Amino acid sequence: MKIPSIAIALVTAFSALSATAAEPGQALPKLAKLLPGASLPSTSGKVVLVDFWASWCGPCKASFPALNRLHEKYASKGLVIIGVGVDQDAGKYKQFAGKMGAKFSIVHDSAHKVAGTMNPPSMPTSYIADRKGVIRYVHSGFRGAKTEAEYVTEIDALLAEK
Amino acid sequence: MKFLFSSFSLIMPLLSVGACAPQLVRVKPYERETLARPVMSRSLDPLQKAMTEHAYFSREATSGGGGVGGGGCGCN
Image 1 (cartoon, rainbow over the protein chains, first blue to last red):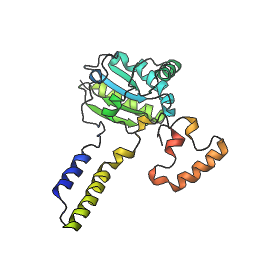
Image 2: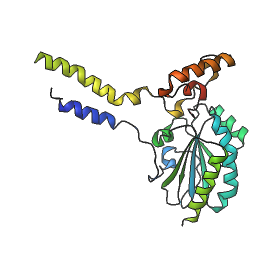
Image 3: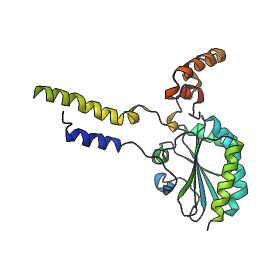
Image 4: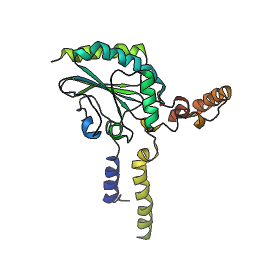
């Protein structure tokens, strides 16, 4: 039986609906455009680490001290860490960030605009982009000291690039 | 003619729904807030919860096991 061409067209159209995740080699989306009104640090010419976190996510609790350490060590050398919180409740977002004492910038993506654009494969997920704004590393999940060591290696390498 | 039309009207919706089904059904990792609440777990008693989740994971591993209820964040 001949499959009607309209069926094929529909299938390809629907497959285009499948959201693509942000991958190494792609440009980091402009967060200021996706979150107008949020106070975002300047990222031009800097190595950017975008971390998706939430108050209900266990490994995120473990990752905050690590991110704080990275911020303390590398902020003066050109690293910018932006924590994108995907909590829908603003109260929970503020409470978690306050309790964990985030020293890096955090923004609230309650409408999931940034999350929908970058499509993190798990919670938490970090994207590290180089000074030119190209995503170079994606970390799906946080596995304690192992992940922190990977961050250090990668950030050192990207900061060394001009 | 009638056969062609009826099979066309059966296959087309199946193809369309099949193509976009992953987007219709799957909860994204960052949307798991409500699922992560303790009240959403299958059992609140810790021992019963551990036993049930182990049995569920053993049987449902192809869909990630009990990742939604147990991990909350889908971190497994």
